[in-house]
Length: 347
Ligand code: FES
Ligand SMILES: [Fe+2]
Image (cartoon, rainbow, N blue to C red; front, top):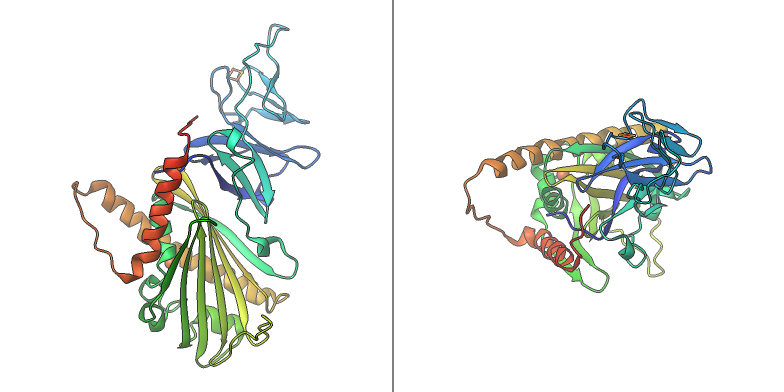
């Protein structure tokens, strides 16, 4: 199920330069490039003439125009065709579908669905990723599994204990109950797990320098369909934020995922880790980047297997859910509601 009429992360801003770049988002093959003035454009990656992919050589970007490499149809930054070969009249309908696009919080967001709904549909925020007060490492891994499996995975972090033992998992994660809250007005599912006396996993001991046991708080906010935030607080046992909201004894990590369907059965798994400590320490950056990528790849391996299992299982398999699944189930219900509210317009 791909929810239409929503904003999705298509790329990091750094990926889009003054050259042709293609990425499939929600089953739609989209061409991105940055104009000479620095604006990101998004349009269909199929020439209106004979559907040659415009990201494909010898298609060229000349100034702010794309010249199709097959027969030379030429398009402007808004997707309109400005020249065709062998005649002066450009057919009125010669126009690439263009997509609403916004660059925000280091991401390039693209609107999938009825473009008239873009302006009134909220883009969730991840402000740390572009904030100079925070240091961020980030990447993207391709997932050969449906986006819903990644949503399930991220909303139930009890799997850290088993799948990510030795990296971010300790016994206390699976052993500590969660509370789940559905905020329908904000369109957010929140899942909270506060471990007040927990083992410190290598991910945090090596990055913060804390030794011994810790208070470890995990506060998840998922805004379906695309943006997932994990506010992670690491502190010496017994330390709590002060009444004025300051929290000087704690280390804060904002773990951000953008969950973007590539197709019905594959996903772009964007991940970022922002921190408010050791901000200029390149070793800590390298360590967190390498560790988080490893953790993401452990999830990718497991979810790719699950996708193959689902694809080949007989109909009628019944999942069994328990308390740890309340966040994931709430997320599924919210996704279903969003899908029901969409116009169903498809490219
Ligand atoms: S396919 Fe692009 S000009 Fe013919
Ligand atoms: Fe995981």
